[in-house]
Every structure is written in C-alpha cells, then in structure tokens.
Length: 300
Ligand code: ASP
View (tube, rainbow, N blue to C red):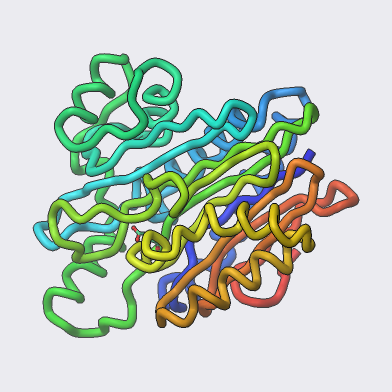
C-alpha cells in the first residue's frame, strides 16, 4: 500500500512563502486520511479520487475552489482519473459548475460510454448525475483574483500561482490508480485545455507498470505524453521508478518549462521528480510515516 499526492509544480511565490505552514498542514492531513482509507481496504481508484476531492475543496490549491482565472475572469477546470486494474479512465475539460471536477471525471468513467466530456456537455452531465454544483463565487478566491488582476496590469507577474493537484496510489490488492485536477494557468485563453484531463499526458495508470500524475506546463506534458512515458520507460528499462521519473523530467526539461510527476508502481515503489522551484507534495514512506515537502528539502 502506497500513496503520493502533489499540489502543483511551478515557480515560488510570495503567497506560497507566506502560507507555507498551511500548505504543509493541509498536505499532511490529506495524506494521513488517504492512508487510512487504503488501510481500511478501499480501492486505489476510490482513494485517489477522495484525496483529490480534499485537495479541490482546499482553497490553497489551484483545483476546484481556488482555481486560477481565465483571461475573461472565469473558471474552466480540467480533471481525469484512471484505474490501472481495468485501464478505465474518465475526464472532464472546461467544466465550470462542479464543486469537485474529479467526481465528475470518475462518474464519466463509471457511468458513461465516453472517456472525456467537455464544456456545456460536461456541466450538464454533472447536474444530471446529481453531483454537487456551485456558482462562480464559490470557486474564485481572493488570492486567485489578485493574481489575475496583477497579471492584467502586468505588475508583479512573478506572483501568480500555477498549480494542479494529483494523487497516485497502490492498494492492498496491488491495484494502482491516478487522478489529476486543475484550474489551469492564470490568464489562459477561454477554451484552452491542458494536460490534466488527457490520458497519457497528465494522468495514466496500468497495473502492469505504474500510476502517474503530472503537473507543470500542460503544453509540454501533452507534447511529451509525460505520464505515459513514465510507464513505458519503466516497462522497457526495468529501472527503479525514481530513476525513471527523474529521466522523464530531465527529457521534458529540454522544452524549457515546469514539469513535475508523482508515480507509484504496482510493486510499491514511489517516484517523485520536478524541475521547478517548488512542488508541494506528500507521501507515505516505507515505515508508514507521512512525509511532506514543498521545496527541495523534506519538512516533516
Ligand atoms: N498542468 C496544468 C495545466 O497546464 C497546470 C499545472 O500543473 O500547473 O493546465
């Protein structure tokens, strides 16, 4: 049984520096709750979904509540989930009304013949399936509005918060799963779709290899098929998962941008790699202890 979560790879920001303690406490609490679910025998796919729901509900992270604003000042969220035991996946893109996009993605996976629903159709699917919805005010937090306003005025452009959240797990039966959810990038053009909802780019899971959740510049992860590349490389080289994650991040880094990945293999290895200044993250180590880190060094 193993689980890893992340809160997005990107540049450092004043907001993150000021709220480091809250980030680290939130990650610690969420990883412990997710570990408990796994120990109770819940499946990997259920646990990654619930871990991402907790991250989406927390306004500190750029997913669900606290999503980044588009150029027009709206919210357009992407999410996807994949179960490595069946290789079934579900995703949503440009969704605007669901409190937890990852629940909608999982409902697409379980209750529809499709893999990816977008825009108005995704919003309607969420409502028709009785998933909890909210209006724009719920999603927009003061700090994301500030980043958006700063970006519009082209002042303090450094202090925007890219991000995404994700979780990967292997359960007591050795099944793996991955889930990723995001508000995308501050000031993105309306209609822009990132990697988080694309199977093989920002999310991938296969019991024969591993489960992967990606973050960073979506245009790079889509072009490199980053999540799939981790599984493919692990399969071909039989190297350890951490070495594979580092290699894939290094290769993607040639595109000059931020890339981060977390991964868990069905034999219980974990991998964490990023080329950016920070990637808030948490995992359970081999002794069952919760570990948290934001920058390079491990905090607890
Ligand atoms: N990958 C996300 C996107 O491009 C953003 C992020 O992870 O920071 O939408």
